[in-house]
Length: 392
Length: 206
Image 1 (tube, each protein chain N blue to C red):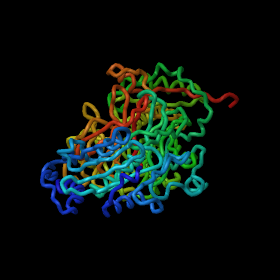
Image 2: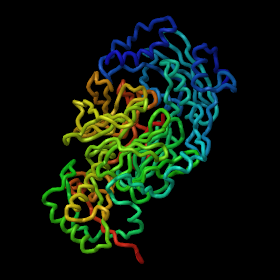
Image 3: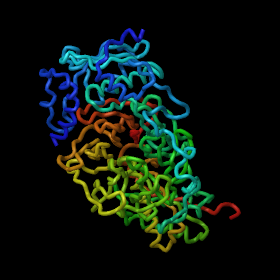
Image 4: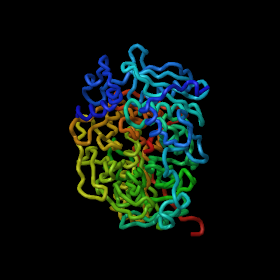
């Protein structure tokens, strides 16, 4: 367990090691103890005053960096967002410049996201999430009719996908494509729609009697859809092809919900009830024996989501309130309870989550770095926003 | 002006930038950021943004835009037999049944309501029934959508035991999206954990 986290985090130190000058003053590894309590990478920002500073702080905070004074920073970002974004990244201890770039086109906001991606790559060797997208549902109030939206991962540039004025639920992206599945009550019944975001065309892929909801698209190619149907007499997990054909019942429990896929498409993890206790379980994607997962310490688990690197499952635990939890898939450590919230969805980087949390009686989107527990609220939309799905 | 800011690029940073932007035909050291192509939701790196076949999947072999009435051995009523029926939520409004927290078991105390619903449907052979399952706000959204459906299905089973054909009964779950009481306390929650019974009359001329 510790080793796994070390591996994740020490990649961030690889860039330092390459320079040949050890950063002795800051030993990040010594701070690592358990999941969710790792020390952020200290970084300082100078020269950015407007939207560039805002974007860089948001993007890097939710990817494990913390913004500190220059004298205690490991990395320095200097640059400008006055007329086009430009930035230089320096490793203070190695006294080396790691990056220096200018950006033009689109908007300052998008240029700044591109700079944050370049900084994340230069420091960690991993692809940043600054230019990724989410889908989510938005309701004028905390319940009832709403619409499906897509937006930048930080909530900016929202675009409405549906215009039905009906109850909607659980958008899910097709991997690598501008297309989503979602549930809509537009025809008077909860049906699952496929919706192309390039053509605007949509079609019902599951409109059976009873419940049709919680579409989950199989990685890596979107060939299979897992979902919850009740046409057999109870809410169960079913799988069909991308176009709705080839329907097959996978589970036969009393009450199953929220399927998600392992990144290789071989397993479906879902929420269920077993002996009247809420449990998480997994089942082979083609059907087979159901295996219950141990979530001791995180009662009433629902809404699992499997990380793209295959190592983690995040889910919602219901105690007095709802909490976002993460546990290693291999069971090597118990679930870590991270922050209050529901509906967690992994970013492509397998370390950042988007979820919704309560603000009064409505929900807002928030973005969490799992390994530092740093989080930031996304751009506020009016009404209630929930069920975010991160495009991968 | 922008170019003045550019200093010598370490090879590592250049490689990193090329790897993340994939831009090969633009001036070195400046990364152009594509704008938003209408009417899509924006650019993503690499190909694969568009779908073959005019934005649909699977050509014309899928279920299409109509109601998918394949029942596949299921035992719930075919949706198309309910098309166009007229909803009458008032007729059985007094017979709404309520549930314990996080439970889909029909309480003994609801027997009279179940009997009344069964009697009303038995007396009007052309009517059908929509059972609407609902939850309080204390579960997660999709969990509640499943729980609400289970509550509706539990009522359908109970009505079947009173001799009502399941073919006459449709279920729908609203999860926590249709509370009877908008409050946030046990008084409201107890009212919201419920099945509403909506009589469906034949459409005019049918």
